[in-house]
Amino acid sequence: MTRPLTVLQLLPALDAGGVERSTLEITDALVRGGHRALVVSAGGRLVPALQALGGEHTALDIGRKSPLVLRHVRTLRRLFAEQRVDIVHARSRLPAWIGWLAWRGLPAASRPHFVTTVHGLNSPSRYSAVMARGERVVCVSDTVREYVLRHYPRTDPAVMQVIPRGIDPAQFPRRPAPDCGARARVAAAHPKLAGEGPLLLLPGRGTRLKGHADALALLATLRAAGSDARLWMPGAREAHRSGYITELEADAARLGIADALAITAPTSAIVEAYAASDLVLQLSRKPEAFGRTVIEALSVGRPVLGWAHGGVGELLRELQPQGAAMPFDGDALARRARELLAQAPPLPATMPYTLQAMQDATLAMYRDLAHT
Image (cartoon, rainbow, N blue to C red):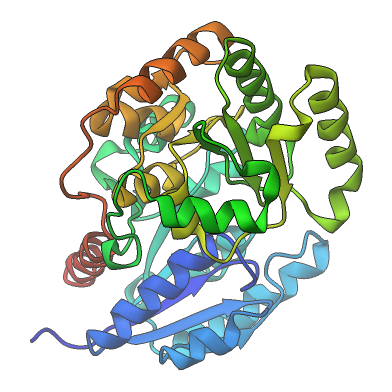
């Protein structure tokens, strides 16, 4: 067995989101592999979960956008040395800057290795460029790799490594289609979703970027053609976005689809939501870096319809090409929806994008870097 490593991950906070999820997933893999997992962030509700996995947390507000954040450079530099850190892994821009400044201030012979992960398609800028400064630059998709190389052409392609995100297939098991029981339970909870027609599902936060208006227009088109289609948008209803919900409800009323629409808070039973649906939508107006919804839905056995751009388009091209529609072409979206509802496309028998594969590849990258 190779010697145990000490890996320190940097991120703004431990609340909720894809960066936080990846941090916990790698913490779990490190500890199970006999390594030491340190995390520096401002803290948050996921700290107990991190500690339950065996991770160690140090509270520093390294994501605070203030000149005062620079005072943490010296603290981090001391932490790197005292904890004999082998690898520093920065997952967000401001923490990456603070980490990089701390790292650069150490003698070259005693520095840990410096890794970054580009989790999103951030606007190109000198501020964002720090994410391309790692000795290894992890990209969560080929889309992200191409984006980094296009906007930061000085980045050495040899240091870039694509490690896609992944899911645990056991948490998203294949369900029968149709799943009448799941549909009945969803309809009982949300009566507007009761009916014989197909159920469309658009999970996502309450923001225009998630394409809720496109989903409403699609539903109106399908119903105008005689379909008794219904639409559920779990996650869109958030307390601090009441104005946006009012706007969506007004649009639905104008389109004549208010009685076939449920806009709800996030569901804790997302697998049940996938199982109840006939078609899962991923209509983000801004290209996604990856597209976890796509692989979750396909793992459960439900076809996906999405715009053919970003990480979502990349996944659909590989796993279910029939679900990719020309971005922002409402007519093309409706045609694809009718085709997918009329005849379910072939879906992957197994999901290649697994949590285990992501964890294994990340730990292999750490080991390779530590022995260079």
